[in-house]
Length: 153
Image (tube, rainbow, N blue to C red; front, top):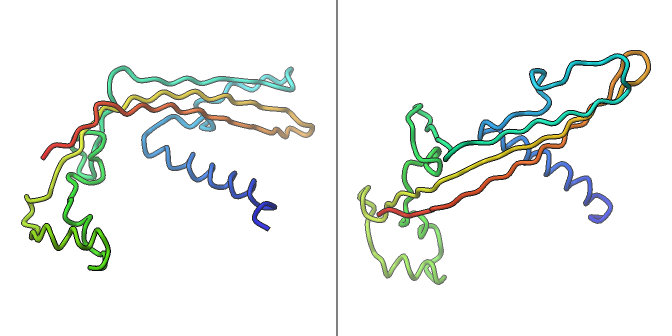
């Protein structure tokens, strides 16, 4: 049964992934500003859109402050909270008992930093049909590179 619907599920998952990438402010190829002018003499038109960045990407937190790209959702990470919630009989639960530290807002907190560069390329096609109808298809390609990742205590 799962094999029957596996391609459909993969397509739906891909659509959800493509929608989540736009929190990074990448260009959407289907926006009307990026669409080529309609040529009535042509039944098919193909356009491309390229996007690239110079240097590293900037991140902004919910207050609008300029932060590192890896700290846009959380200003810091809490290593002690990662150990909470496990049963005492598990290995992680035993590690939490061994550490035996209280979260005072400083102990166990660290910052994650990194440099992100992103590029995008999309290919769009429009096929004219009778009665002024058209079929459009867009295939975006996004390339991201995360480097110089560091953890600061």
